[in-house]
Image 1: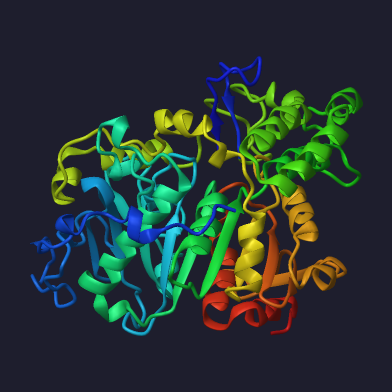
Image 2: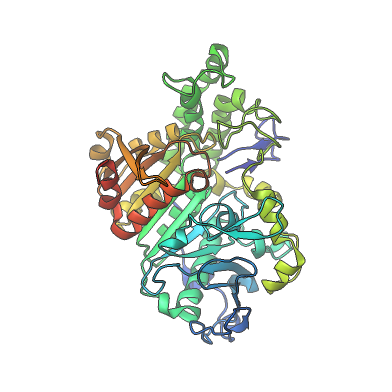
Length: 497
């Protein structure tokens, strides 16, 4: 997750800035005009057998293409396309059926963060059925993929991101409320009109990084309920994240020596620690955009000694085991390869979209959202309501080598989260958990704790993209979660099971 600021908020405004409740809205007043939604679906077919039994003509106009193995040898059926949302705009998706029993498998929605990051980065570098080759010219089948147990729906959102970029910044989504409306309209069309056989399937909502804002806020605002929320290295509360940078490098038992931090650097980081925590508490209490932005400005100074070292050959905020190749995003996260592949003319032709420059991260969109209060307000109230009011199970996964959304900050956050299970959750100790490695041996995966419908899991040897860094461990966690919820994941604390 990252925000590039161009404001007056900080003297380092020319440098990238790493980021990482809205009220219920009047849907009837804000929904798209019905005249935009009463046209028929336009179907294309690139499949090997030419059959598309799941797709029917619906009330909404869409352009949907069944893909064959040319773009991605997925091992299952797949469709890509666009669905109209509000204001005549279109939202792009790529849907892969599960390789196993797709008719009974759950549906998992995946969102990348940014803000401004395409969810196709997750599809082709983390959780989807194919990976882009190193030269960006093709894809190969992934053996470790969430499609081994779930139907996967990757959505480019908000409008302005990935293949959902209309090319005109005036048409970009401006707020989380607007983006939530668009996603809700999209899901209505997708599940009711175009893939109605999925309406009764369990529906899980997964997101990474800045999707720690997207997923909880959308799920809290939407009329529909989700069977669970899965937050992966997700930025939920920025002051806690900045405080966690100090804890990550400077607390006893933190990252080993040799990370570039000595006692003087830690002393410099400690100067603003109490002010950051104080303003962070005020932000939590008020949910006021200006208060939370002020907290962000203050908390930035805690991490500034670290941020100064995010240079070529220096610190990598997405994985403390690696050096930064090309700041601000430091490379090594598949962005260049995914962009190269999706910018090939024949790929865009197969996707039935007009030629455009695809960006894995739209940094102009990122800068635009960095000026808005939605980027700074936390998601803690929404998470509390989801746990207590909607009774939605929430799984939190975090890589222990992530700095930009560090485990230390995540643990602080959920220990202080106000909800009905607060006391019982906070009083628990973290327990070791285990997964089966390639040889079938039980392997230490990290630590976790659980209370009621909340499970927080740390993942060893994983950075900001933990599904990529520890594919088998994360896959086993999420598969158990979608099949049996918190108790099934808790079963992984038993080494002999």
